[in-house]
Amino acid sequence: MIIKTKRSQKWIAKLKAHKHTGTHLIAEFWDGRIIEDPKKFKQILVGAVKKSKSTVLEVVVHKFSPKGITGVVVLAESHLAIHTWPELNYVAVDIFTCGDKSNPHKALAYLKKVFKPKRIEIKELRRGIVK
Image (cartoon, rainbow, N blue to C red; front, top):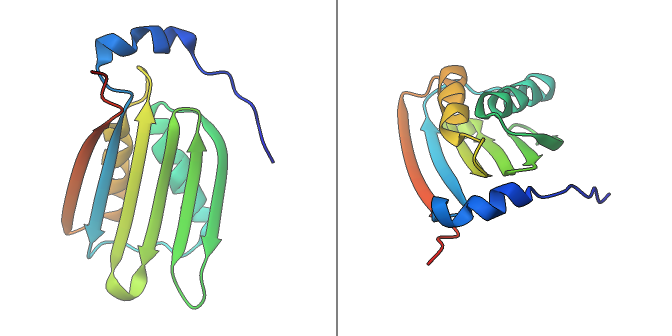
C-alpha cells in the first residue's frame, strides 16, 4: 500500500540554515528489559514517537519464533525501528528524524526508561549535510 503525504516546503526552505536534513541515532541497549508482547511493543514504539513529536504513518511489529521481536514505525519525518535478541539480552534501536519539530533524543530518552539497559552505546549521525 502506498500512501502519499505532502512534504513540508516550509522546512525545505529552512534546510540551508539547518545544514543537514536530519539526525540519525543508532543505539545499542545491553542487559535491560526485553519485551516480547507484540501489543506492548507497539505501544512502546508509538510512545517513543509521541515523545519525539513525530508523525506516525504506519506501524509494523513482527514476533519471531521462538523469541525476538522487530518493530518499525514509518514516520512523516523518517523512521524508528527496534529489534530484540532476547538470547543475547540485546536491543538495537534506530531513530532517524528530519524537520524542525522532531526530536529523536526525546524518543531515545523514553526508550531508555522503558528498556532500562545497564549498558548503552549511542552513535549520532547528521544525515544529508548541505555543503
